[in-house]
Amino acid sequence: MLSDLDLAFTATYLRSVIDLSGAQPAWDLMDLYRRITTRQGNQLDLESRAVALAFSIVRRSARVPRDLQSLRRACEYVHAHFGQNLTLAQVARAAGIHPVYLGQVFRQEFGETLGEYLNRIRVRAAAESLANSDLPLSTIALDFGFYDQSHFTRIFRQLTGATPAVFRADYASRKTSFSAVH
Image 1: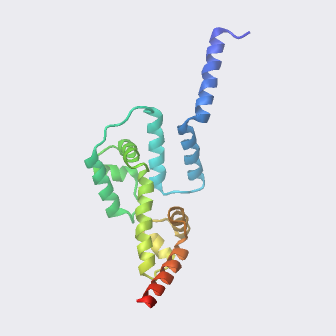
Image 2 (image 1 turned 90 degrees about the vertical axis):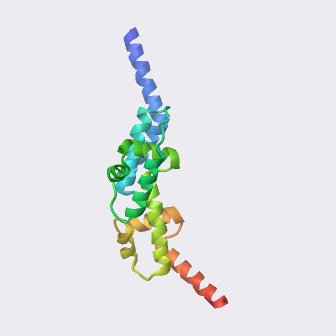
Image 3 (image 1 turned 180 degrees about the vertical axis):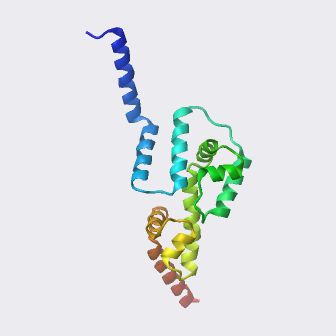
């Protein structure tokens, strides 16, 4: 027969297992673990996700007041330095705010992590370079802050639905057919 203390412990333990298995932070934690072990995402993306996860666990229901000026400074810094290997701490320092606050408020306001935002900027700039130059994919990858061509290809495909090589070839064929018509 279980004592009241044993029952309370068992109920608490079972509730925490149930909460963990179904709560969004648990799924976010598993996704973060997968991204780290498969080397998906850049350091800023992983840091942003980890901070967002920690913050969501600590303050599940509370909404953080936003500082739009700081967010604007953070975005400007990312735009100015997107070709570099950025960290959440660097961007937060440039914006004049704490990294945890930046990670939370950025996701709250824009619906994506700072790392996801950085990847979109990098892919947009890389797409322009693919369309307007014959630079090798590896050069474009490094110029726009990707670790290597493989990382570049994975992120580019994830965001555009095509590999950089297919994008370049498709753009070139459209450009050629447009020139022939005019």
